[in-house]
Image 1 (cartoon, rainbow, N blue to C red):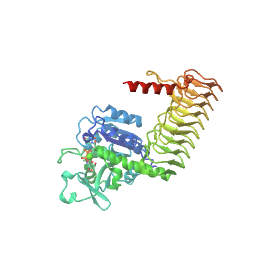
Image 2 (image 1 turned 90 degrees about the vertical axis):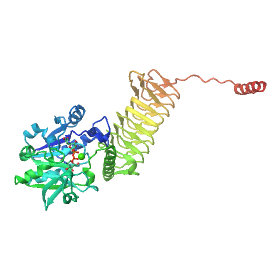
Image 3 (image 1 turned 60 degrees about the horizontal axis):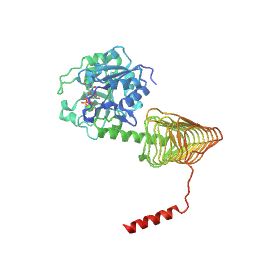
Image 4 (image 1 turned 45 degrees about the horizontal axis):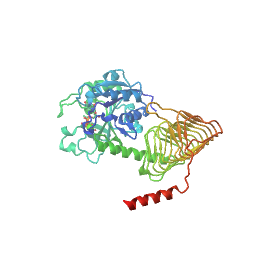
Length: 450
Ligand code: UD1
Ligand code: CA
């Protein structure tokens, strides 16, 4: 990685009206994380030494997300929306601190990869003052056009200001730009707003640099990578592209996806080798899966850690705080939450295990429910190693089942069960010989009379 210092300026002051949302556009999620988070993660991977984020007025929520991802990010407010160059200059204090390279990105372009940022920035080390990122969209309408001559970038012309010949150019401005730190402020301060929109265009940086005799160049990216998100339709398109990337990356690292198009990952999903994921599985944020795990069809996981050789589903729901140690088996229609289940334990059918610790090798029968909530507080259930919980048992927390204990079928357990004990907690069965026959006869007689 380059040893040149890098200031990243992320523009996040857009209004995002086309999203038709109360949530700011850049906080909408793709693969489980905000668009702003994606952009900041890419810039961090590209070696950002300082980060400035430009937000709109009153956008404390966007500022908070920026600080959560990059704790030392500087947040600037653009009070009036006067154009992309004006937005960059809102971060003047950060630019004045100086950096070898400056990279400007839009927070609504979440798919850009660190490798592409490195390619965009590389010409600065060779003396370029400005580098823009171009791409060839299927439909160039609305984009600025990159006017090139050989390897040189001559100008970026906004569509509204372009001549017919310039409009015919298919090489378009993605919006990302790299500027030499020593030139950046002087160039930005000279950008005016004498154009058809009356805005301060960042794209004018190219012609100003050239007038100074400083070179400008263009790098190229895939259209998929620089697609901006302005609407919910484009949000779904970005999601599809990212899911495709995540699936391919998982398979390349030794995960079998039987029907990849039906499996949905989060950007932070971690998967081991020889994992098998059957169709229709959703990984929410915070999931780590060890080697040799099998995830049967129709499972939903979030905030869960699965160690080597675990098997879950079909139809299992693992909620945050779930930790399944090696070889644990979780079967169909089982829900877990804040549950640490030690190695080899089994919860095979129709159970809820919440706020619980289950010891190694324990067996929870079908329909075992931890009753962890009284409407006000949550309580813990402790199940010792090797314990055996009979079918359809309600364990009323707080409660402890000792190691090796047996709980008889159909129990309602309200007090602790000692180690190796048997607890039976159900009402005694009553049998009345002939009762049903007499009952039917009486009913038939009554019907005849009626
Ligand atoms: C811009 C580029 C255009 C490029 C296109 C790619 C300029 C002048 N034009 O056009 O060449 O093809 O992006 O999508 O740069 N923003 C602010 N404050 C402002 C204005 C914009 O923060 O005052 C942010 C927006 O939130 C957005 C980004 O900058 O994320 C781009 O702004 P937008 O108005 O969408 O620019 P375009 O006209 O699309
Ligand atoms: Ca735009």
